[in-house]
Structures are given as structure tokens and as C-alpha cells.
Length: 148
Image (cartoon, one colour):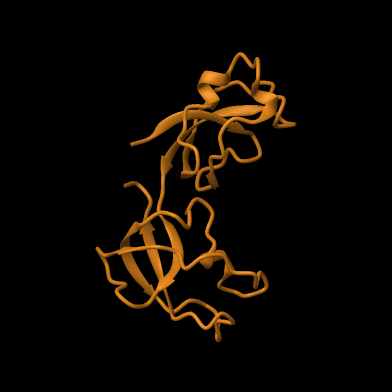
């Protein structure tokens, strides 16, 4: 189900994904607050459609203003413990990883996914892109359902 919201014009392209982080300091007193602040904090969204003929509105947070778009919540790819990982099961992220150079880091700490919550595995994607986990974790690359 899609939701109409306002986002920065630089992000207003179908397929763009972002994590909504909530209200920023510059939002105080804005006349468009109710149209912008209507998403769920910490949720990952994908722009599905840019509203045609919509005005670009001035915004204290976005230098080129904001535009009306339709967005939908989406799933996220993540690296979870291999043990017990199968489609339909629940999993948690292992925890923070200091190795930001690792090709799997974006999956060990994916945007829109928190360490303190369980998620349902929608699909198993296979091995993560790293050759060796420097934390000696046995991980599986999965698609997590973030909508629960």
C-alpha cells in the first residue's frame, strides 16, 4: 500500500530507497509538516511514483525543495547467523561490526534494520560477498521482511 509524502527533489525518482529518520530541527514551524512527517520512523521506503504536475515546495532541510511522491515500505538485505536461517524463520542481526571496509558490512549493518529486533526471513539469497568474516561469524545473506 503506497503513501503520499514529500521528499527532497534530489531523491524524488522512482526506485530511490531511503530510511525515514523522523523530524529534523528545521521542520519546526513548517506549513508542510503533516505531509512530510507521515511515515514511520526507522522504516525503509522506496519511491514508486513521482506525482505529476506537483509543485516544488520550499524546505529548510532540502536545498532544492520537496516534491510529492508515493512510497511503499520495502524489505532489506541482511547478513544473519546461518544457524536456523530459512525462509519463514525469524532472525536478528549479529551486532555491530567495526570492519567498514568489508564487502558485507552494508548487510551486517543495513539501513532500516535494528539490532534489538527480530525479523522474518522472506528469502535466502546465499553467501554474503565477503571471503572471510573477521569476527568469525557464520552468516547467510537473506531478504528480511520489515513490514511486521
